[in-house]
Amino acid sequence: MSTKISVVIHTFNCENILRDCLERVKDFDEIVICDMYSDDKTLDIAKEYGAKIVMFERSGYAEPARNFAIQSASNDWVLVIDSDEWIKEPLKKKIREFVENPGEYTAARIVRRARDIDDKTQYPDDMKLDVPEYIIRLFRKDDVDWPPEVHSTPVIKSGKIYDFPYTGEGVVLEHVVSLSIHEIIEKFNRYTDFEVEKLVRKGKKINIYYTYFQSIWRTFEMYFGGAYKLGVDGFIWCVFIGFYKFLSRVKYYEYLKKKK
Image (cartoon, rainbow, N blue to C red; front, side, top):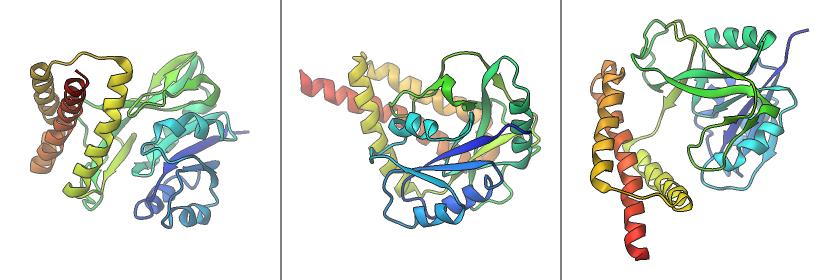
């Protein structure tokens, strides 16, 4: 008898991208949709795929709902993906093989890479990033705790973490970029507010000059880590990533000035 896997997806008003995501995970044993009270057709699409639907209060970002959604899954092994991520067939195969015989491992890291939703040729399976981004997305549900802060990463409470080999054979999770520049800026503005809240709770000190050079470093680290293969679009995205870090710190600096 094969080990069953639950796929957990967090949603909010994602009718334009959810179907593409669900098409790629519909052959897993269970799909759990954790929705933050969407007011578009998101839930109608989820029902078409027979997903188990649970609701969580709207918070503006997914992390506060992570633990609740994970514990809502029926199966021991959980794969968490976002509605703007696509799982490839070679990765599905590796995941099934892994959970059948995990040994001492209770979680696994997967490589994620970005692609434009309208670019059907971008990132073929044999194209590799020079510096891959590994993220923890597969784990036993009772061995994980996900902090409720924006852009937090799951904490594995016991066991070891396995890294799926990045072989250039499609063992990747694709992050589909479908937003316009205007939408990206709006999202960055909203999410950096949450970053400030996190910095306030931690009582972090701030050096704007150091932060600026960190942002520049992040931009070029990503670009020369593989994004250069995407040409101008890759460079633009790397600049945005660096800007995100700088913007969140500048907002925090502004908060500290007003507090004084």
